[in-house]
Image 1: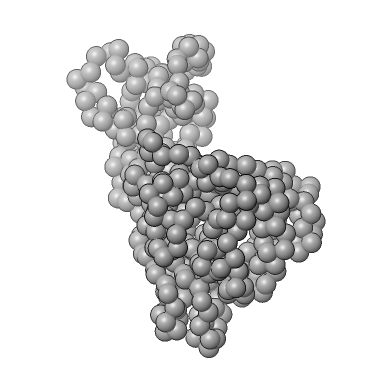
Image 2: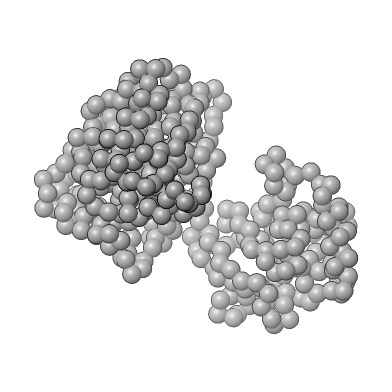
Length: 411
């Protein structure tokens, strides 16, 4: 390994050579943590050319400047984690308590050192990289991997729906807000066609066919299989203030989603749904069983609240890692459910044992209390459990089955 004095001139040489490399189709380097793990295992038997190729690909993957400055965070693929750094002396990955996790492996010349490891699923691992006993970088890796089924992947011969967007700035219920709305229209949608409706909170992220949830892809597949009815999806972002830029954290999200009462239901019924019907010549079926609403976290309690307040308009709820805790009073729902006449609403819940536990409440316990109350009142409900953390990764692979269950008697 060369001494650190050669790293600065090496930066120029590597930058020039890597610029000429061709990235993969998605614009990322043709190296993943899993591939690196396999290639490192046989590196001792590989020739210099293969070692240099892997060396260059890892630098391209992390970024040369990030590696030299110790700012290259760990890369995760499935349950494989990859660390890398450029340093003049041997580096180690240390646990949070200061004990050694593993020594990093030198690769080629110029001080590049790497470590690839398989990690247990559903774990958080706080680490720091030390060089000669001094910390150079630190972070946390969260291992959370579930495999998608074929229903979450584009399938040959399955017609695709189309996505159209508009911006909504004219809310009377939530004045001084602006938001993006994405509309999924099923394949071969015809003006005036009567369809079912499904509303999604935090809409843009769930409307992305390549995102975590892949809702449009699942819709395409299940509609084609006739395992759910022809459905128009309305994907609504939470309101941001006019001075906020698109992509900023929406300032109005918690107020809209976590608050109890009928405000959000009125926002949908009086503003967004009529606007979609007008823009796309859509005619939504009137019966509540043909109308569903979905969301995760605060979007999950928002979905439940809309149906709770207006079961005449929303007869189905899909909620994952729902925030039925004391953010804005939502912890009262289990008690309310038990003392209120049962409403004609079908409810799907999903949560994980690694969900949040903080000063607002314990999310797994809150969802279990919701399930117990729904069972006590003889609701048509289902709750699925796994080891997921807070977010959508735990829900995404379950989405096809959840939609089949939710729409099972509507065609």
